[in-house]
Image 1 (cartoon, rainbow, N blue to C red):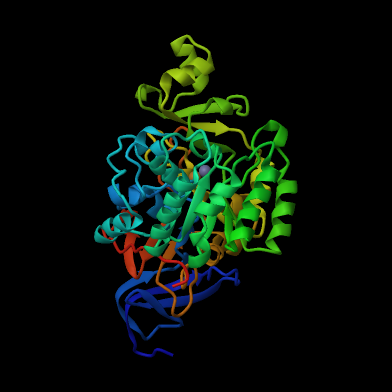
Image 2 (cartoon, rainbow, N blue to C red; image 1 turned 135 degrees about the vertical axis):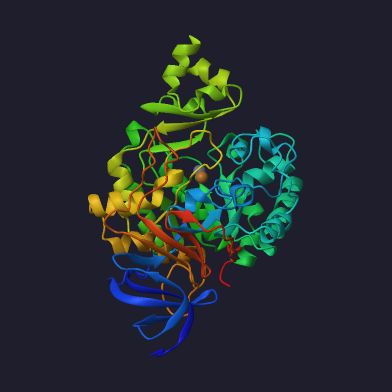
Length: 483
Ligand code: ZN
Ligand code: CU
């Protein structure tokens, strides 16, 4: 086949992992334009760009199922923390937080300040406005976007410590409708955070009604991930069933010492519900979480590291007990003193993390926070850590399964057609990596150290990373659901 054919790009002599858990096989990949056009022996074919894949795995580009990259796509379009990990698509707008429909005072309301503490980026009155800016200034990689219920609340309500009124619900439903009609793929919620904690289930259902019309996704940082985690899973599933839409449980975990081990229970329930309704979940490969600095995490955590502080930037990277010592205060007082701020919380159990990662339907999502001064290492390390640490070193699952959890599974759950798979006709989002050396290098001390072992990254047929260097190309697109 394809004798003497000419391609724009050929990857030669690679070991191909297709993203759908087929056993790896040896072969060559021919690309024309933005698509993979043939796979097999292309020895007699020629190409403008030839990439030698000897000793490397060629896999579909990784899809980061859970990100807060809404602003990074615009402010840092090289997307270095993602490209260096082999990520070619990010799902933005998670945990109830998105830039559109921008609230005027968005930056002063945690957790919206995770996207931007200055307020300058909260400037998109509609999702269409956000999408148009991103289309006019593409990033190096693709994005697919959720819009956030917390952002809507901050935009539509004068105070957040109550349920929305019928008029406010109508306004927020219109925001959801506009967003979905303009290319958002779903709505996210973050009822765990104060600005959305007073939203009852019925408010969420009423705001999310347009999801049914657009077959959008309901994605949630659940109301509770500790003592009431089971109730939260039931609430999440109920919302999905009521709206008849697929649901994704974000960064699934069981928080706090007394809930360690409960992933046995939660995964059993998730598996049961999954047999009756479309349901997905993602997970990051660390025992520490990260978000804004909050009192209520003090007791649940064995260690807390400050990641940023607006009034006290000098404490970024410092343990909270040390901050308290230096300020000659209790830790609770120190939290008040250095807010607004962010933190890393050591409050998960390694056995739970491994059990959730290994669960058949779990996707990999980084939950990285790209604007933190000293971010959680998951921002730069998640994908190589799953490949190198959890698959190769700990043998938690075969490499084919690890790749599936960051490609084919994710594309299926989010409805990203012809992505997350190496096959003729699919988009040419391809990552080449060395299975023997790929590993995360970012840790809690050196939190922005780029991963090792990612050789080449191709997005829509264009090389964005090669020989440990970005190429400067910006072929990223906005991906719609089921189209
Ligand atoms: Zn979250
Ligand atoms: Cu998140």
